[in-house]
Image 1 (cartoon, rainbow, N blue to C red):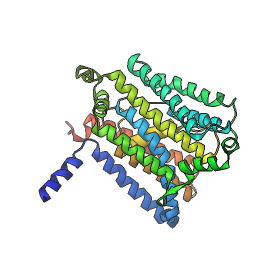
Image 2: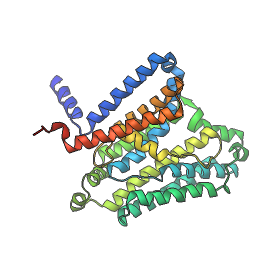
Image 3: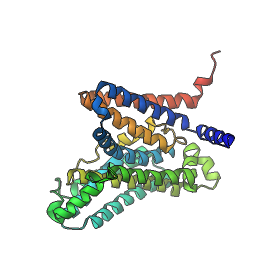
Length: 337
């Protein structure tokens, strides 16, 4: 029995990308303890709960972006889809439409954008940077136009205070078992997408495309369909984050989700998702989102300026990608002539 446990641990540690996950979680622990030693309030229960809630947005957007990074693609429109989701749902609720209907319409709009992205990249072979750059402008334009180029009123003005409070409590302010619902929502979606990526044929196809798209085609992988599925995951995550931001503000903001596409990339690469495609685990994305939010939280608590926060995050992202490139090239294992 002991030997079986040992073999299970060896297999787990030998999983491709697990080393990066362990490194990210180790870094998270070190960063958290370091900030806690500087300011004891970092260890407070309230701060931990707030940290988990704030981290949830980065986790979801990181999961969506990680799916695409593993395929060797990227989604620059994911942040603008967040804004579109927030504005569509908020605008509809201010008109008296029920939250459920508003959420469904926002989800359908985001899914349509995901399909378009997938077709442009998978079928028409547009570079993902260009294809999603175009849809980024389209979706941000939609976020502006849906309420005539202005932020919405409070959603309670349309659906009433009771319904408005219910929506906000479900997505942001409410708690279950003492933890904010935002985190539970993110955690459930994380496990769903983790299962799809690690235990299903679609997940294997996603890794195959990122490793070698030509070899994947020869193996019978439907590259177009798989690419569309990856972009649909990104769209779902963007929609949910948009609903969370709408609930947080109690209204729709046209600039909601601004720069979130980069936050998603940062969460992924910090956790070991390779921007070159084919490798990485969603567990790493979880760690990456936690590292990002812990840094942001800790630097805020010690009074660091926003510029310093961005500088630190930027250095970590560049270092993570550089490390991935060096490891892939095998430079660590080469001996000098």
